[in-house]
Length: 613
Image 1 (cartoon, rainbow, N blue to C red):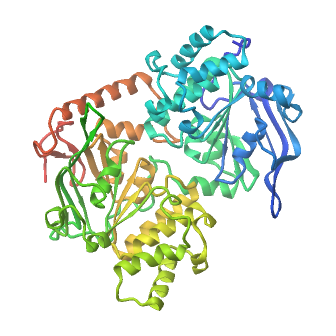
Image 2 (tube, rainbow, N blue to C red; image 1 turned 120 degrees about the vertical axis):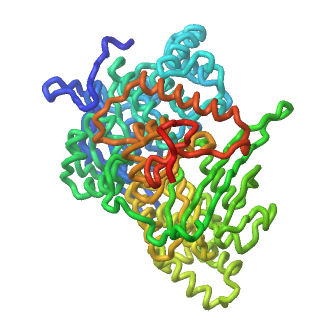
Image 3 (cartoon, helix red, strand yellow; image 1 turned 180 degrees about the vertical axis):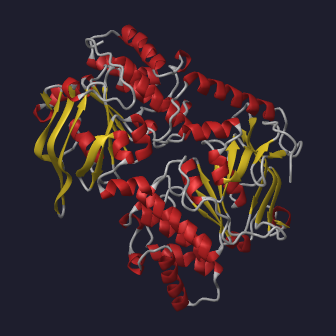
């Protein structure tokens, strides 16, 4: 250990002004990048301090300057970036004065960083323990044997069993990879830990567990944290103090809960209002689907006992059940959210409905007609017109070699034979207006648009075919908070104006509550609970739904994290999954216990009394 650093602090109890042992002092910092059009100011006269044992959160949207400050602290601005004014002092060391070997030693001994993507931060051809050993042997005088022993200690510190020390990054889950990155960052016991969007790619439950692990380690070791994210709800939960950045400026800073509950700056209020926490009801609750099917007419889509089994492995092939006996109705004009962790089968359901995957068993009914029976292995053009998909990555789903006009004209050529060239152009401009974009974007390439604009183009492309159902697979997960809200409001508006049904796939419960009329929870291939979105969030009954709701970021949550309670919940859920896996898909229909008119729970998992219709 580097001296006596142990500092135990409560989540929102920052060191008092008189007792503050300043670890990082950023003073009047301005940073510019050289571009072909002149200097671009990325950080504009920013000042803040972080004390030992304190967590300071830096919030803001993409391009606000958060990561630029983190890179400047580590001396990673590159040739194009330069500090225009101000300075950064870490433990009485002027970062600008460091270079060469001194800077290299500073980076791991005094300041280390946990990056956003653990898979990209880890070397894919080295085991996780070997990567820790590499840091220790490079920066200390430890022998390889001593370094290997210390690597096991560090892995144990972040909750990775010694049996996984020899695993390669691709053999670990996302949460375990992020824990390994944290272990590497803490290897030399730094004074300051910078965390740049460390949980963005993680499921909500794993995210909460990682954050709690970090807080426990901070209490034991006493390091300071600079926590960078665009998720204000998450930031308030972990930070003592926060700062909000916009266009390179620090527009507001102060006590985390005070800033959240009584924001002074208009932009801070905009960020907070852009996405309510999962426990906060929206103004629209409760709301029926705008043009939902009446009880006498069938749902537009009905899935009956739908299952998908994948054959995996080489010589020793085995079956993996991705989707098990799914029964799901999507009413006309309804927005239904399908929620669950990664690997729960949500996207596989969407792919089967889009006919991108062939179901192993079960049926898909469109307006009461059995699609699989009528169309066999290949979907008709009419079906593809009725069911359209919007993908998660708005850049990856658009060909970078084509103009925007190409993406909107192509489905019109395939599905609207009644339109000539002039008619298609008019329809393309109308589609852009429907997603609140200007026609001048038609001759641009995807890379010339923002993430939010690209996702709106993807939605317009789906609308071009005249669909009755849109499958939206995590369409906002890669967007900034305020942009995300705009896309969600757009989907609401399209449902109201066109009567389109939307299957919204997400692991974000706050988004599901805001957007969806109905929420259905999926656990490792099976549907376990469903009902009106506000009922599911306010009164979850299935153990897994309770776990999801309890893990969703909520700055106003009163209950504290209980490690023993979480472990017990995990064990109970694993037992439910094991019990279900004993029955092969299609062996018996699933039965549901209805708690109210629409709120149901899988009867196998919860016996709450007789079912009602």
